[in-house]
Image 1 (cartoon, rainbow, N blue to C red):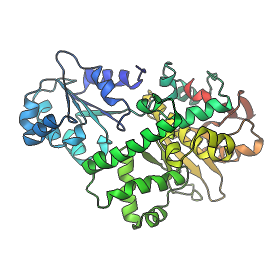
Image 2 (image 1 turned 90 degrees about the vertical axis):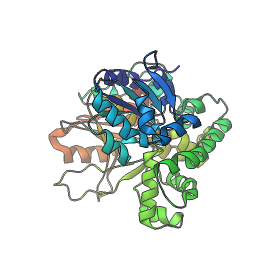
Image 3 (image 1 turned 120 degrees about the vertical axis):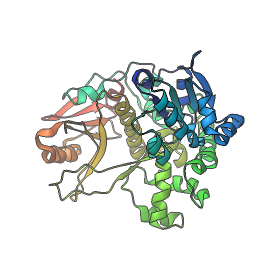
Image 4 (image 1 turned 135 degrees about the vertical axis):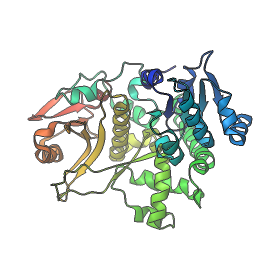
Length: 407
């Protein structure tokens, strides 16, 4: 088994919270993690089991009253039980009574928000991070970055290895498939399953057969500013419908829109979100990018690598001791920074990604621009590149190997 850094977060939450939910994409390892907390006094039930699902839907109150402490897997399949759970934990407020898992973002489902507000802690579980795949300790990159420091890179990533890491992604079942073609087959089957099972459970939308097409369009636009009108035209819908479909893809953890970083006084900033995939392996499969194709045309790697870095930052933020938000930066002079990290104290760390083994001073224009915009809140700017050395390019601005993300 791979270590899951979310395990300690779940364990801590069960000690002081009545309901704990592990929320993340299907096949990310939620069930495996939840089962680690199954024991004699905590019953395990899955709503992927049809008789169990039928019982939960038929009489949710009786279903929950029959349980003292329980794990309920894939709870989004029967949202009717959430109100019954609320009543149960209000009557018996012992911590750790219910551990739930869901393949949709439970915080965005209205019944969860209304029924369990103040009673539930939701812990995200994304596909495996690079450090989890390497069976390392929790990375220290984020904590050091906000101290103005950088960890030492833990490994070298020669060209072929980098391509392998980025195109493989983090889904455990996909990683098991050694042949790249077989992994791509797994991702295609995964998308079909998502459309047929998860989408109908969380959204009543017409034309859900357009979701695979929308995903393909999103894959082409990954790393770019979100244009709902363009997405809508591609699937024959208006921009409002495209926005509704995109929110569904976010709810099931396939994509994320990254909001622009801005301060009120900065009127020259572009205030449009960017679109990113949560898993670079899924993105590579949707684009049809094999390692051989990327070797032949390195120009294709840029946006794929950017989504890989986004995924690693997203996972690291989920484990962080303090809340870290991820934004992007672009101004009307077209200076950009791929990722802007901000902590609760308002401190800023800029992250730029370059799919090359060399860097020059002109690669730091965006980081220097946001350093000026953020002023004293700017801690440091880091350009992640495919090199082996950490190089200083100015006050609080440097280039560093990609692998420091999992140091």
